Image (cartoon, rainbow, N blue to C red):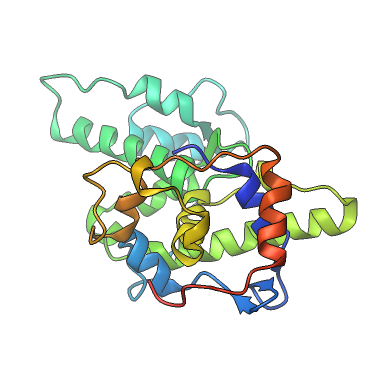
Length: 244
């Protein structure tokens, strides 16, 4: 999905870190844990996503859990490039052992974590701390990924808001966190901003579960000066869908 930068920017400019809400003329509104469950089906009521600081070197952890180490992982560097993961683990050998299969699965999961769930502003690297969360698949399935994703997005929007306050320029184009969650949430809460039904594929039905599936093939509406138009809409906003 291509993020709608104008919509995201107009929303983030209304984010207030003090209350973790968007301030609109009709009141305050925010993304909740219920929204995360409804839109994406991610768990929220299980174990907290917490990483213990390891005693091992990051290169040793990478070798143990992925079976290989990137050449630029040296010294105290603890990040790998997502493109490296996709290139190195693009083809699983037909005679792969169970250990190799799990290493490829971890590489795929790590690229999703760094590229979708917890991306930084660049979206090009992922910290190896997340690799420790998927070392044990049974344990990984007990984490409250939905709660972690939402708190991470909150933090990134707060960082963007502080940047706007101090510099007068928007950081939304470089916003970290799961931007698709913010965009799908906005389409659900403000239906007049969402893509028209004709722009959404037939298989993305109204009763899709999780509900975010209905937007996977949607295209954002296009306008002349989109950012200015979205700002006008939010300045005059008086109707919000309170339940999705």
